Length: 234
Image 1 (cartoon, one colour):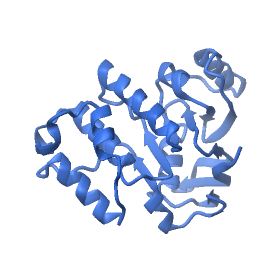
Image 2 (cartoon, rainbow, N blue to C red):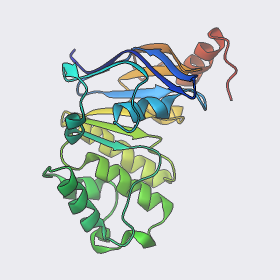
Image 3 (tube, rainbow, N blue to C red):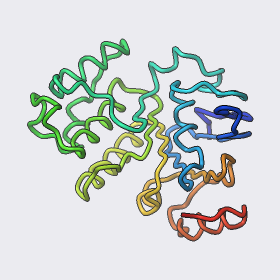
């Protein structure tokens, strides 16, 4: 199995404080890679470095067999923290602007929007959207432009039961089409349904990385991994 992204001794400091240290992950191409960890474990910081929002203090990121470079962002879609939306534009115009800024085309826009339950909202302005609808659009934008890798930080935030189900459908659909997806989430029940490989972070360190069979109880594995590392869970 080929890895589309790896990190080597990756680290990040903020004001001389280690947030991440010596992180070595291996993300297989065409699979869903899920990152877990308690609050403050460094999940979002790791995704920000992969997405080009933060620069590593040390170590390397390798993408598609070469050192990560800014140009790679054309083939990396992401939703980190809150969706970056233009409230005075419609759904369609937000999508057009994103594609224009990234100099990419999109071939499956309608399928992505329909899977996420947008229906006839394409011409509505974003400023009237609920938190859940904004989150759905942020997820949709991450997949626009046919990226090779999509990075999602807590994608279920603000989603109701229907939204979470639609997100799961989109993840499985995009995986079938060859997308590689990295997800950081605290919703272990959802990770258990979609993950092909899992990683557990704690105190800024990688405590576990392994292929996942979607049968092992993730809550038990998560808690036992933290306890072995002497970390008290939330």
